[in-house]
Length: 68
Image (cartoon, rainbow, N blue to C red; front, side):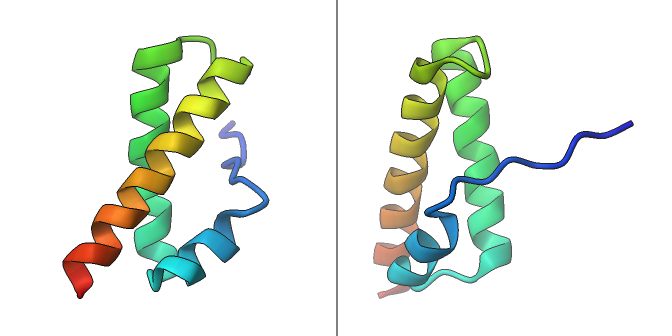
Protein backbone atom coordinates (compact mmCIF):
# COMPACT_ATOMS: atom_id res chain seq x y z
CA UNK A 1 0.00 0.00 0.00
CA UNK A 2 1.37 3.41 -0.98
CA UNK A 3 1.30 6.21 1.54
CA UNK A 4 -0.03 9.59 0.43
CA UNK A 5 2.54 12.15 -0.60
CA UNK A 6 3.32 14.75 2.05
CA UNK A 7 3.44 18.29 0.73
CA UNK A 8 4.31 21.32 2.83
CA UNK A 9 1.37 23.53 3.78
CA UNK A 10 3.06 26.43 1.98
CA UNK A 11 3.50 24.37 -1.20
CA UNK A 12 0.70 25.94 -3.29
CA UNK A 13 1.59 29.46 -2.22
CA UNK A 14 5.31 29.01 -2.93
CA UNK A 15 4.60 27.53 -6.36
CA UNK A 16 2.19 30.34 -7.24
CA UNK A 17 4.62 33.02 -6.07
CA UNK A 18 7.31 31.50 -8.31
CA UNK A 19 4.86 31.31 -11.24
CA UNK A 20 5.25 27.54 -11.55
CA UNK A 21 2.36 25.16 -12.20
CA UNK A 22 1.44 22.52 -9.64
CA UNK A 23 2.69 19.53 -11.64
CA UNK A 24 6.14 21.03 -12.16
CA UNK A 25 6.27 22.10 -8.52
CA UNK A 26 5.50 18.53 -7.42
CA UNK A 27 8.39 17.30 -9.55
CA UNK A 28 10.67 19.88 -7.92
CA UNK A 29 9.41 18.87 -4.46
CA UNK A 30 10.27 15.24 -5.14
CA UNK A 31 13.78 16.29 -6.20
CA UNK A 32 14.08 18.29 -2.99
CA UNK A 33 12.98 15.26 -0.97
CA UNK A 34 15.61 13.05 -2.59
CA UNK A 35 18.26 15.68 -1.87
CA UNK A 36 17.14 15.93 1.76
CA UNK A 37 17.18 12.16 2.18
CA UNK A 38 20.82 12.11 1.08
CA UNK A 39 21.72 15.05 3.32
CA UNK A 40 19.74 14.35 6.49
CA UNK A 41 18.79 10.69 6.34
CA UNK A 42 15.76 10.14 8.59
CA UNK A 43 12.65 11.33 6.77
CA UNK A 44 10.76 12.65 9.77
CA UNK A 45 13.62 14.56 11.37
CA UNK A 46 13.68 18.36 11.56
CA UNK A 47 16.96 18.35 9.61
CA UNK A 48 15.25 16.44 6.77
CA UNK A 49 12.38 18.92 6.50
CA UNK A 50 14.69 21.92 6.77
CA UNK A 51 16.87 20.52 4.00
CA UNK A 52 13.87 19.62 1.82
CA UNK A 53 12.28 23.06 2.16
CA UNK A 54 15.56 24.85 1.54
CA UNK A 55 16.24 22.81 -1.57
CA UNK A 56 12.65 23.20 -2.79
CA UNK A 57 12.83 26.98 -2.48
CA UNK A 58 16.17 27.02 -4.32
CA UNK A 59 14.73 24.86 -7.12
CA UNK A 60 11.68 27.11 -7.39
CA UNK A 61 13.95 30.14 -7.66
CA UNK A 62 16.07 28.52 -10.38
CA UNK A 63 12.99 27.46 -12.32
CA UNK A 64 11.46 30.91 -12.04
CA UNK A 65 14.63 32.58 -13.29
CA UNK A 66 14.84 30.19 -16.26
CA UNK A 67 11.29 31.15 -17.23
CA UNK A 68 12.18 34.86 -17.41
